[in-house]
Length: 218
Length: 250
Image 1 (cartoon, one colour):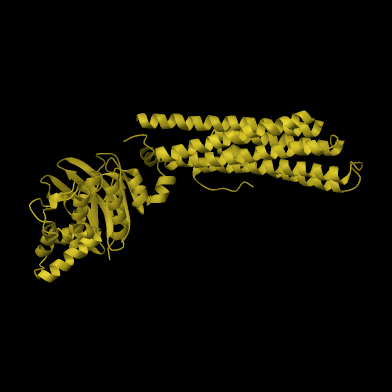
Image 2 (image 1 turned 180 degrees about the horizontal axis):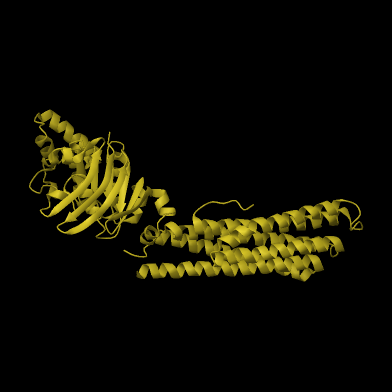
């Protein structure tokens, strides 16, 4: 029983580490979006600098999972929790990278996006931020319903992304900006849309932990 | 080739104490079936029923049906049953006063094989199958007790398979062995399942996960769940199975 106690403590540690990493990634995404919308270069640089800390957390979580597999020979629910934990860390790490891509785009832009695009990006960013919160909640609270809701939320983000691109490349709205600027804004939309996809992966990992079944939320 | 076994509504008692309740199980031929469960759950009693050893206990009683392929064990002579359904025990139990050769030849002689050349051939075949031949071929006349624990256990496996049973029952065959000998036994099980149907009782969860095709979980005399081993160790259906294999009790 003593053995199991140590194992349970380690599983809690895994959960806390993932949550901590999730919080940091969410903050990076928020800052990156703000850097784009306000054209704040120092905030963009901060996001880029902080990425190595997120990568370090990914490695730390992976090391913990490998250690638990090697020393505890986990099975059933324990095994699913650990394997899904590794996948969650990889998704979070990729979301961190996309935040860096957003931040780098902010540095390439010569000014904040024009009003209409800015509004569209803002709305996507809010939806993605809600998804990240919901994904982390689903994981913490073992909430299958919350995990499944991510699929619909992601559909909304995909729709917004499509509108953003259509509007950017149709004449009329924000007609003043250069083709390069429009491309960069389209990339920002693309990065946010990709972050949404990674959050649906998180939902799939949560469902795998809870049910052992594979699902497709995207 | 091994044969399948079918168990239906098997109940077993020691005196007034019931140890097995309504067990239904299909044991597939040429597969390894692992029986797991906490101490006292009835798993050893169960496999002792499979070759009618349980009823040799003075107060023991059995009810239900067990079939080897299509034949009910209870329509057969118990001696024939034990030849067709062999058993290997937890502690290696070679006949201590006999040589390595005689330990295996004795079963064959009892089965009516008298010719020296045939005996030698069958003994060699059994020892090769048990992956022991190369280690003992130069000292077949030495006492079996001169062998290491792991070698003695492989000798017992050779003894059991020499009489060419259909099914081989193993009651924690590696629990008294070091890791290397355990690995040898596991490799051996993997090899011989081509020829025999194997039912193994084990306390070692990883061992069941490594070697068994099917795993059955027993608890308090009942078969709680039986499924493909990979399913049992990743996604068991019953909460009690999950709790046992993840070390929450037992």
